[in-house]
Image (cartoon, rainbow, N blue to C red; front, side, top):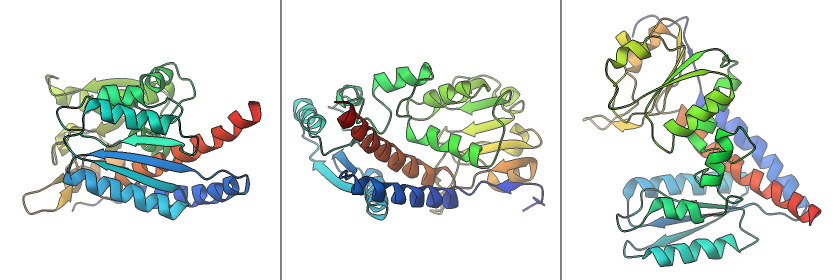
Amino acid sequence: MKDVSNMQIIDGKNLASMIRQNLKNEVEELRKKGIQPKLSVIMVGDDKASKIYVKNKSKACEEIGIKYEEYILSDTTTMEELIGLINKLNNDSSVHGILVQSPLPNNLDANVAFRTISSKKDVDGFNPENVGKLSLNQDCYVSCTPYGILKMLEAYNIQIEGKHAVIIGRSNIVGKPLIQCLLNKNATVTVCHSKTKNLEQYTKTADILIAAIGKPKFVTENMVKENAVIIDVGINRTEDGKICGDVDFENVANKTSFITPVPGGVGPMTIAMLMSNVVKAARISIDNIDNA
């Protein structure tokens, strides 16, 4: 690797650990007030990656003290059955957060599922009400990966206001909510995607470049300007089985001021912010009781 003495690694793993510890303390305080934060996760089918993600969420809940329950449904589950379960959890006052793990089988409509989850329990931030509130810069549950990225930038005192942020990727989970998050922090935002022509001319002007395209080592040294901040959302496997991001870390890092590694960057922060949203939902439930 080239000399990267001027580059600083954004340690998402360490930051997430500190956030989880703070949440653990907050859960203890909530318990003293008679509130036990609880997350309900629904997984349909037998997707291997989903199983890993669900397991990681379960472990994080256990560490923090959040009560965790999961519903594993067969891939023959109907939309009516899924909606019925979501509504049951919506009406259960002991449940503070509901999460439907993606992807769903082809016969099920994820958008209908997200729309059915109560906006007050939508800890993934996918309900249209929360999406709309984010665009209006109102208090809401923010999608966990964009939320984690913001927390990383803030923790490392990286200026967002007035900076040019370029996002590669326009998914509903990362790219689109991230646009609003950065606009709300007064960044100038450019969004690139698979149909963008001359991509390099946009990425080379980025003060903050966020890669969320799902292609291993897609962002190369010639696409990045000197001292840029690089946030790598990608989690890919190379042919030899190693995990890598969307950024060619080895060759890009020497040009950056800050960069996230893969693994150990954005991934741990995503789960930490999910936990944060669950604790927030539990805290709000106290306020609702007090104001009833």
